[in-house]
Length: 106
Image 1 (cartoon, rainbow, N blue to C red):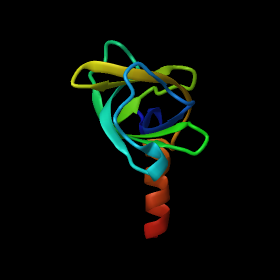
Image 2 (tube, rainbow, N blue to C red):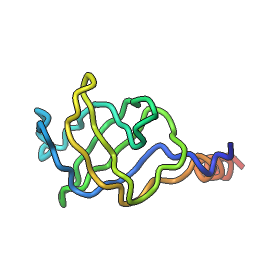
Image 3 (tube, rainbow, N blue to C red):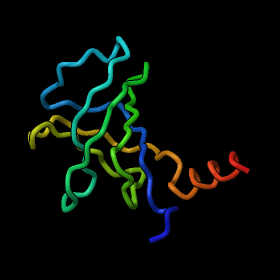
C-alpha cells in the first residue's frame, strides 16, 4: 500500500468523555491510552494532548491507513471505553514525511 494512505497523527474536536481520565490537560500533561477509529481494527497505543480550545492532538504509536476527517476516534484504557471525538483533520502522511526527510538530507 502506498505511504500516502498512512498517517500517525490526527486532531479531533473536543472529546466527549464517558469516564474522564485522571489527567490535568491544563498543565500541559499528556495522556497515554489506546485508540481505534474502525471497530474491526486492533487498538493502537497513543498519546493525547489537549489544545487550549479543547481539541485533542493525537499521536499514534504506529501509522494507520485511511484515517479520515468525520470519522470518530475512540479512546480506551484496558479495553474500557473512555470516550470519543470527531476527527477534524490528520497530520502529514508517511509519504509526505519521507519526502521532507529526504529533502533535508540532500
